[in-house]
Length: 229
Ligand code: SF4
Ligand code: SF4
Image (tube, rainbow, N blue to C red; front, side):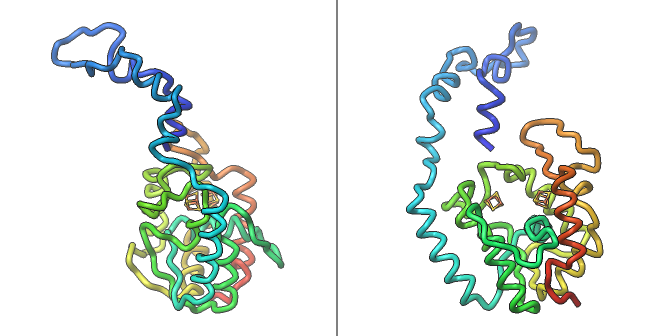
């Protein structure tokens, strides 16, 4: 999220202040024209405030997470990943692990145990802990990435929950969950691309590209390779 912000907004003058102040009722921030904001960006203040995790930290998180998934009696998933699992699967016979996150490991667990209970969570999703965009304190995706950051993600997730008649906190067998998702949601376009493909602001990201759409359709048609109810 912050990366997108600083790539788009280079100075604060016309966001926190005005080129011309026409009314005393519309106050500027006293720092609007100070240059503090641009200096902070130049000095990489965000990396100091939110230091990225090292390769070693991510490797250690991966080891821990794989063990946790292997031993788990239930899977924790954010609703976005119900659909992302189909984009990841792409209808393949033999999906392979990816470096970025734990979609493969979660998928493999569900493949082996299709009726494993899935707890629908707002944060601390089992897919996320090795992702470079994962915030380890808040245990959620706050920095943004190709699928968009926290508010955009929540926006999509509420649509997924509304379409499937589910809520955060529900626990549902995986095969029943994916049956509902694939019955109710045929396309990424409607959830991940506003039904129009139009992005209106950097933070309100679109991830339902034609390529993703094809991946999702293929993963959905294959029922992500598990026995659905
Ligand atoms: S289009 Fe992007 S956000 Fe949407 S389901 Fe696929 S990977 Fe996830
Ligand atoms: S942290 Fe964000 S981008 Fe990374 S896997 Fe989780 S939801 Fe996806």
